[in-house]
Length: 145
Image 1 (cartoon, helix red, strand yellow):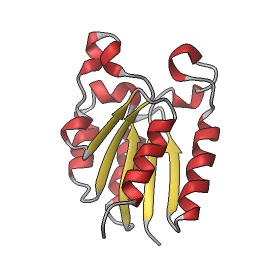
Image 2 (cartoon, helix red, strand yellow):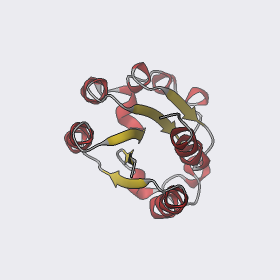
Image 3 (cartoon, helix red, strand yellow):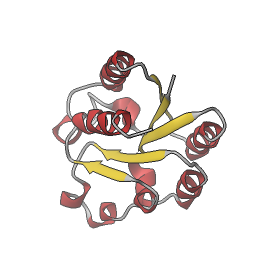
Image 4 (cartoon, helix red, strand yellow):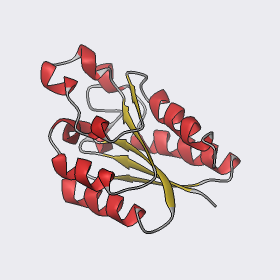
């Protein structure tokens, strides 16, 4: 069974209650449950994890290098704009990487316009709300091989 790792960065545990005018009303659990259901229909194994800690995200990325994970879908949240360490970990991962952002970061503050993660990502989806995760999942599941 092919494996996908979905990583949610800092403050995404507050989805549904934190700035719903920007991030929507769905909770992280709602998003993850829909991803689990869709992946299962296609015979994919999916693991969804969230952390407010950079090192924990890096540990999960490094573990994915060794456990047969085919792809990482990552919303690094604020670490997008600051974490060379996450970029370095993703650079060591040989599978597909899709970067996802709920909001359109290019319509927001200028510091959000730069992404270290994009330097490694095979695709970037921003501004589609939770549908961005689903677009990323569909893209991963449709890749040849």
